[in-house]
Each structure stands twice: as C-alpha cells, then as structure tokens.
Image (cartoon, rainbow, N blue to C red):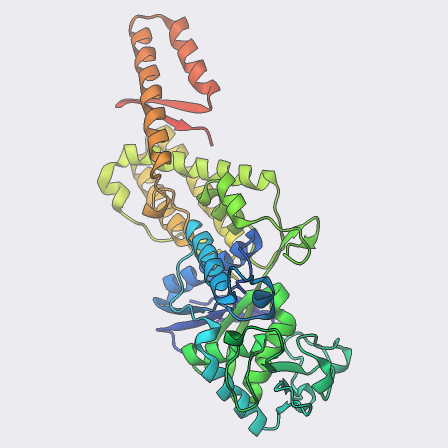
Length: 470
C-alpha cells in the first residue's frame, strides 16, 4: 500500500508514511466565523473529508482536528450592539456546521475553538521569546511579534525570501523591528469589547491569528503530526507563519502540507472580501445536497473549480445513472445481493492512492455502472451482482451512495416521492390494461406521456418499474 500526496513544502508528490500507521493524524484550518459559509468553504472542507475517508479505509483510524477561529479582527468588526462578538461567532459556527452536514462531511474528531486554548497560545509565545524568536513591542502596547529574521528557515513553505515579502499588516507596525514581523499577541485597544481580552504577561489582549492554529494543533495532536491541510489561499502568510513559529519553538510540526484548490468566479478566487461569493445556503436551497457533494468532489482537489449551472446538471445526470443502475440491479439480485459489499476495484484504489485522484476514480465507477447495465441487458446475474457490489463499495468510499441513510428523502421530499409513485403506478396500470386489451395506440400514448415527464419505464418479468431519467 503506497499513498502519494502532493506536499506543498516539497513541491512534489511524496509517498505518505504516517508516524503511526494505526492512527493517522490530520489538522485542517477551519473557518473564521465572522459570517456564513460560501460554497468555496464547503468545497475546501469536502476535499479533506474525502482525504480523511480514504485514509480511514486504508489505515483504519484517523484523528481529524478542524478548528474554529472565533476571535479575530473580522469577528469583532461584524459584531453589533444587538449581537456581541461571541454570539455572532457561535451563530455563524452553527451555519458552517449545518452546511458541512448537509453535504455529508463527517464531523471532526475534535473541533476546538480558539478561545478555549488561550493558555496554550501564551505558553507557545513564552517559549518563542525565551528562544529569541519573538519580542514584546517596545512601545508598551502589549503586542508581541515573531522576529522573522531570527529564523533562517522562514519562507520555506512557499519558497520565498524575507526580502521579497510584503510587510505583515496584521498589527500596528510602530512596535515592529522588521516590517515582515507578524503578531503573536495583540494588546487591547480602546473601543474593543472588554470580554474580547485575556490577561497575559505582556498585558491584556488577544491572540494573533497564526498562533491559534499552532497551539491547537500541538494541544490535540502533539508536537509532530502527519498532515496539515487548508485552502491554497492559506499558504501565505497563515501556514508559512504557523510553520515558522512552531518549528522555532522546537516542535517538528506537520510532516506533510496539503492544500486544496479554490472555487473561482470568472477566474478570480471566490471570497467575501471581493464580494463575488455564492452562499452555501443559497446553493443548497436550489440543489439536492448529494448533487452539490458530487459537483464539488468531481474535480481534483488541487484544481481550481469554476462553478456554473452546467456543474449541477452534469452532477445530477451522473448521479441519476448511478441510482438507476442500483435500482435495476437490486431488483435482479434481491436483498441478499444488495447487502453484500464488494471490494474496491484495483483501478479505483490506484486512482485514489495517487494524490486522491477522484476524477479518475469516478471514471472507474461510471465504467462499472455501464458494464453492470450491459450485464442486466443480457441477463448475466453473476456479472450484475459483481458490478453492484463494486459500485456500492466505490460510492460508499466517496460518500455518494444515493441509498445511504444520510441521503434518503425525508419530510416533504418523501411525501413528494410517494405522491409521484402513486401517479406513475396508476399510469403503468392503465398502460398494462391497454396492452392486455391490445389497444396499442393507447399504450403508446401513455408511455409517451410518462416519458415526456422525464420518467423511464423498464418492463421486466416481474413487472414494470420506473425511474427518473439520468
């Protein structure tokens, strides 16, 4: 078994060798909860859900940590008199959780909030000061900065030199020794809420963004862990700074750095700051969540994804083909054959082992569906059973099995399906009676009317079955 992952720091594919094969460890940067999620946030979380699922299949156990940044300049800026910063952060956290759950993203093993790890952040800052890699601002503001020129390896993640970097804009530059130095601790400022500050050796204040993830990763996964993940836009400065401050403090930190590509709009990154984002709630309100999951997963995780109306229609059609085959196959093999979960095809495994090649894995899935349909047409029950078990194994690995419990219709959707089934079954009965009476024109008219509604009929020895065209 050899899984290869693209490591950002090495700038190449590397064989994945976990520290402990019985427990793979992953840390992924979660949301800053100043406002609700857009579809780019969901794509990022889904990328690491797919990686986590695959590693679980291959190794058995994954300890997966995804943080919540609930204290930040943006959170404070979006708070109001009617809703304090902590209330806003909690409400937005719930929106992110709901969007993730809607598309079948598994909850993390641990999901720490930044505000719950302030002591660990302060301990890390103290270590950096002791080692000569951080300093309190001389102006008495209470700010503490990381001294980038004290750490020769600074820039190794993104392969930049300090002199080529722009100044860090995460704090007032007046207390810095170098423009590129970044804030580890931010002294309290007039006008900021009193409950957004914590006591520290350097004065009341709050943590900088970058120190949060270093401290939480260490707290929940240890000084060294397997994979650090996040969006491509986090490589610099966030992940560069995480790597520098953790290793300067003496921690080995992440062994592999994995970054997902961004959702783009007309070639530009989708972001709240640019105002070109589509809210996840709007997308999920217009499309079946399983269709959204398929559309976001279909492109390779490192590629940019430019979403359009055709993205959703293509995903819906692809899922329709899978669902129709599963329904046909279930009728042929019966309950026992349906329950038997087969092994994954070698070509599927090879694709997923090669830097999580979901597009190639989906090609194997759809080829198996085509082969299964051909077996159904020629009445080869053994081949149908083999294709069915393989398709269920592959859709299960990707979290897109349309008959898995999380995707079953409920509430209004279930009522709609029941009503549609009653209407179609009545028309099927009318067609059967017309055929029994040898009224072929009437039988054809009924079949054409059903087909015009996008419904396909399949006549089998045990009756006529219907499905939505895919």
